[in-house]
Image 1 (cartoon, rainbow, N blue to C red):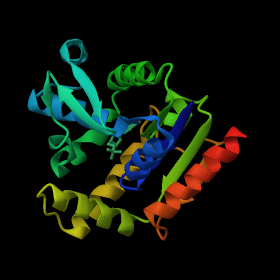
Image 2 (cartoon, helix red, strand yellow; image 1 turned 90 degrees about the vertical axis):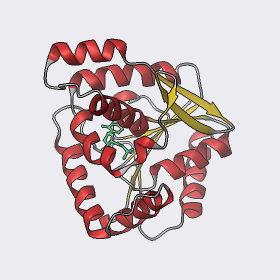
Image 3 (cartoon, helix red, strand yellow; image 1 turned 60 degrees about the horizontal axis):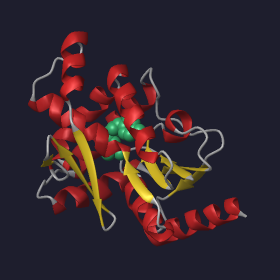
Image 4 (tube, rainbow, N blue to C red; image 1 turned 90 degrees about the horizontal axis):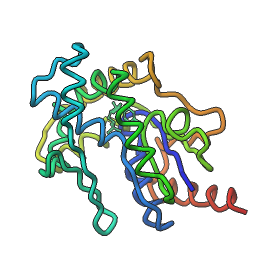
Length: 220
Ligand code: DC
C-alpha cells in the first residue's frame, strides 16, 4: 500500500509522514531529501546541469543510498552521510532549479518506484500522487500559510545552527512555491483525488490523527 503526501515547502509533510509511517509500521520515503542530495552533489561538483553530456555523466556516477535505522532515514552519497548538510538554507535555495531538470526527475522517479516496490510505504514530495504513484491507495495534499511555514523552517534551521531572518525565509518559500508549481515537468499540484489538509492552525498531533482516521476509513 502506498500513502502519497504532497504539498509545498515546509507545510508539515515530513513530520506527519514520519509519524504516520511509524504508527502504521510502513517504510518512509522523503523524496524532497533525494532531490536535496542531488542538488548538493551537483553544486559541490560544479556540474553544468544545462549541458546534457555533463549531466548524463554525473548521473551515471551518482551513488545515492538510503539507510533506515529505527525509523530514522540517513542519506549517503558515495558512502558519506549527507543528511544534515542537505537541510541547510544554501541547499534549499538551489534545489528547486535543479529538481526541475527532466533528466534528474527521470532518475529520481525510477529510484522512488524501486524503493516502494512490494512495500507498504509513506512517500512524500511534490508529484507523488500525480506522477510517481498515481495509483496510490490514499493521497494527502498538505498546505499552510507562508508565515507559518517560514516560522517552522526557521526553527528547523536553528536546530542545525543556521540563523536566517523570518522575512528572508518567507521570500525563499514564496520563490520556491512559484518555481515548484510553475515548472513544466511534474509541477506541484493537488491530485484530483487527494484529501487536502490546511495545517496552519492545527497541531501536528491533530494532523496525524486525521490522516490515520482517513487511512483506516479507506481500508474498510
Ligand atoms: O520537501 P523539500 O522542501 O525537502 O523538497 C526540496 C525540493 O525538492 C523542492 O523545492 C522541490 C523538489 N521536489 C520535487 O521536485 N519533487 C518531489 N517529489 C520532492 C521534492
